[in-house]
Image (cartoon, rainbow, N blue to C red; front, top):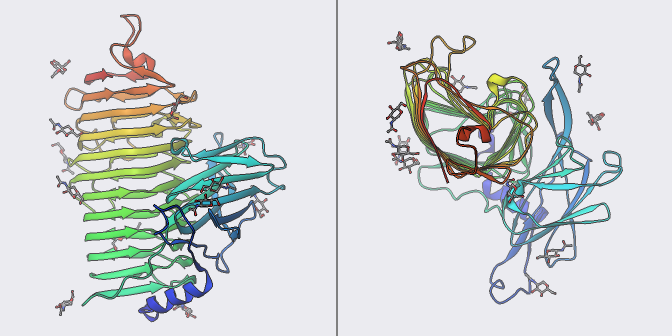
Length: 495
Ligand SMILES: *[C@@H]1O[C@H](CO)[C@@H](O)[C@H](O)[C@H]1NC(C)=O
Ligand SMILES: *[C@@H]1O[C@H](CO)[C@@H](O)[C@H](O)[C@H]1NC(C)=O
Ligand SMILES: *[C@@H]1O[C@H](CO)[C@@H](O)[C@H](O)[C@H]1NC(C)=O
Ligand SMILES: *[C@@H]1O[C@H](CO)[C@@H](O)[C@H](O)[C@H]1NC(C)=O
Ligand SMILES: *[C@@H]1O[C@H](CO)[C@@H](O)[C@H](O)[C@H]1NC(C)=O
Ligand SMILES: *[C@@H]1O[C@H](CO)[C@@H](O)[C@H](O)[C@H]1NC(C)=O
Ligand SMILES: *[C@@H]1O[C@H](CO)[C@@H](O)[C@H](O)[C@H]1NC(C)=O
Ligand SMILES: *[C@@H]1O[C@H](CO)[C@@H](O)[C@H](O)[C@H]1NC(C)=O
Ligand SMILES: *[C@@H]1O[C@H](CO)[C@@H](O)[C@H](O)[C@H]1NC(C)=O
Ligand SMILES: *[C@@H]1O[C@H](CO)[C@@H](O)[C@H](O)[C@H]1NC(C)=O
Ligand SMILES: *[C@@H]1O[C@H](CO)[C@@H](O)[C@H](O)[C@H]1NC(C)=O
Ligand SMILES: *[C@@H]1O[C@H](CO)[C@@H](O)[C@H](O)[C@H]1NC(C)=O
């Protein structure tokens, strides 16, 4: 059926220009006068549910006319700590495309927020300028970004803003390449859309596709554009046994379970992907047995691991090497924001980098599955050469900062893991008072944690290192605080 949508690209973009593509030429400063300014605010197509928790308007900075931003209704969850049952909360998503600078005005609904007492714009490290004018929050945004606007400390009924660079339309057809476009509006796929080798699937801003996309034994194929993949019952995007794949731009809302899977694939770039999930096993991106993977500019708010890197399982097998996650924000309403090393059997995961990540939250009642940065080798797997650098961890609700362990978890594992070695934790900063004790725990003489280098770790503004002011008989790890158990060797703490 989606075949009938092929080649609608040009038409779709033309229609888009008539409806809501509003280029605005500004009398700007000399330096900026060359830049055309523009704003594209797609509407939420029926029958997709909207949220009225906020009234949002946007305008380019020198335009007097505000444009309303319709909000997607979505759902987030928290586990009841007594029963484990999910408690659901309404949440909101606003998304549009722009170039230049925009002003955004946000008025929380009186029903939900009778008074507006406090506001946080997260990630806090972005230092987004804002002010409060009566009940209205005013933001000034000058580059594409993903934000959470939080009122009165309510972490659920927030406004997620996914703000894109101006859409450039469907790509031109190249020789022997297929371009399939989904125009603005609602599309229900009757079956999984299989993206072929050489094909580009373009989701226009305002396109909402209910269903899922798969790259299976595909080469040189792409899924791009600022549309929304909605209510997927399988992975919204499944990359399996594929090579040279790009996913750039989509948002995944209300998936039944996990959003993206990448297995036994090479040279995969996933960029500008946004996910909000509330269903069971609602991981953001799962990755198995893959090489040369880049994930960047992600926003994940998920009801299970935000990012999980596994070895063999689910029909995939082999080692994993060279996986980078960067310039992203993650929020785990269940389990781990970052999780490395599960499943497999005598395999190796190496060269994994997390750089410039904001960890916004973790809420996980089970100690075993806590850890904003978690690694656990299982089933004889080796995990080595892992770098966590420039990680800001905001005050989270329930969890721990680090959990590094060689595991034997009978629920998932047949036997214990191998070594976890050469781990660098560089410029990690955490502010908060609710962290449980972090854990570094080996298994036996052959299954150790070795060579862990903490460099410039800061907790609540205090630098944790071997030269810090402390009684000589106190361990540096006491100040994290972290339990460094048996079979953990060569741990160093430097500035
Ligand atoms: C999906 O299937 C239904 C029922 O068979 C059909 O009416 C509809 O046209 C199909 N949708 C698409 C987009 O092919
Ligand atoms: C916006 O308007 C102000 C005052 O009218 C002017 O100083 C500024 O240069 C304008 N900026 C842009 C980007 O047009
Ligand atoms: C969690 O479950 C317990 C037991 O059913 C119930 O008493 C409590 O109100 C629930 N908590 C929340 C926040 O719903
Ligand atoms: C979510 O929104 C619906 C519709 O507005 C409302 O009926 C329901 O009570 C809300 N749920 C919560 C938990 O606020
Ligand atoms: C709009 O953005 C400009 C920056 O371009 C800023 O100076 C101005 O205060 C903003 N206006 C509002 C209402 O936020
Ligand atoms: C076009 O691509 C197909 C499949 O990738 C290939 O079999 C065919 O030879 C190509 N044709 C040309 C003219 O390159
Ligand atoms: C992804 O696709 C592969 C290959 O078809 C399949 O084995 C796997 O179950 C799919 N994963 C999900 C979560 O749908
Ligand atoms: C790691 O993967 C990236 C992305 O595919 C690639 O550019 C880079 O060359 C790879 N590095 C190594 C050492 O293979
Ligand atoms: C892994 O190695 C152990 C010890 O040599 C062996 O007992 C086990 O069968 C191996 N597992 C796999 C999946 O190869
Ligand atoms: C340790 O890991 C880092 C990446 O964090 C890598 O650059 C370095 O080469 C590794 N060292 C060894 C001895 O493998
Ligand atoms: C922690 O607090 C310090 C001091 O207020 C601040 O400079 C830093 O940016 C904060 N870091 C994070 C990760 O929130
Ligand atoms: C690593 O730790 C082991 C056990 O404590 C010690 O014997 C060894 O000298 C250390 N190696 C280095 C390079 O520090």
